[in-house]
Length: 171
Ligand SMILES: [Zn+2]
Ligand SMILES: [Zn+2]
Ligand SMILES: [Zn+2]
Image (cartoon, rainbow, N blue to C red; front, side, top):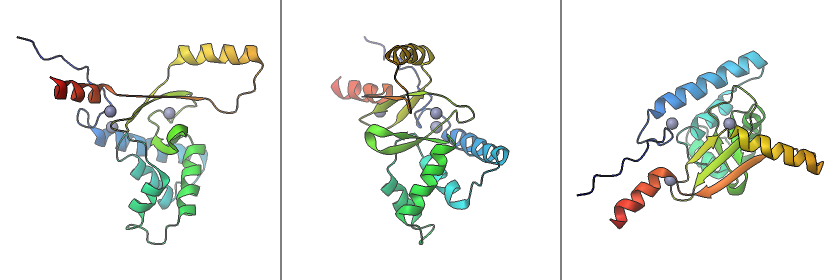
């Protein structure tokens, strides 16, 4: 008899981790950074950040607008975009270019490059520092003499949790 395969717990998945902790840490860091930097985390910026942090899924701007409308009926797309621009500038969220969507950053306290693993099934995005990969890439870019403005690597596929789900369905 087969023993069930132990799927290594991915800290990202809400079913397997204390997401409230992710949220309170992210919001706490954001509030702290904004004070230190002397920038305003206005109520609307705070609200957008909180909505993005509802999960680790990539969220689109119009989805944020839909969710914010009941809270702030005056909110317009431009309001959301301005808040998103601010949050990106401050490194509190990342833009997922290939999806034109946004995800909260869990290491917003420092400047970093990121490798984003995007699950096509559940839409969750895992951020990994992938330091060695990024160093190798920087070397390559230096050799090419290419001036880099932004660098983010986005990989699409299926996360460990969804792989486990597929396995259950098959077996
Ligand atoms: Zn979480
Ligand atoms: Zn990040
Ligand atoms: Zn998934």
